[in-house]
Image (tube, rainbow, N blue to C red; front, side, top):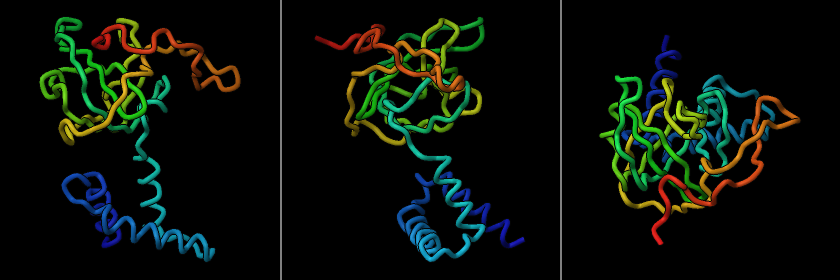
Length: 198
């Protein structure tokens, strides 16, 4: 029973690391212990395995590393550069297309319902379990989807680039792996929806 409580507590702290900065003390200590176990060929404890799984599952990707997929598996952080107008899709869901970027690339981001008003240009946003796929308008967009989560983690203090734009790349199925896509060519180096100011 204590073991289950402890795992639940660790999972909660790791999930809310912006409120409880456990990574600054607890995770490095546990990581050193895990590394020591690996080099001494001692078996990992169940807590060490739990921490390793969490770290792998929540590894942050740069926007340049994302590729189209049918799964919610993208964890990343970016700054909102621009937002388009809010529209109604299907008469009931509000949507808004935005341009977001990190230090490696930019991408079009689809905001849904309350997300449309919750985020403004200049906000730094963390996306957990996001998806990069085609929307109903046949635009390639990054979004939270039903299983993902977006949260504001800061403002105005992030380096970014607008090129390449990952939504402006022609992706084709990988002939060696039917579950993946590869980049064939760039349609445009920057966003055609939100062109850079000249």
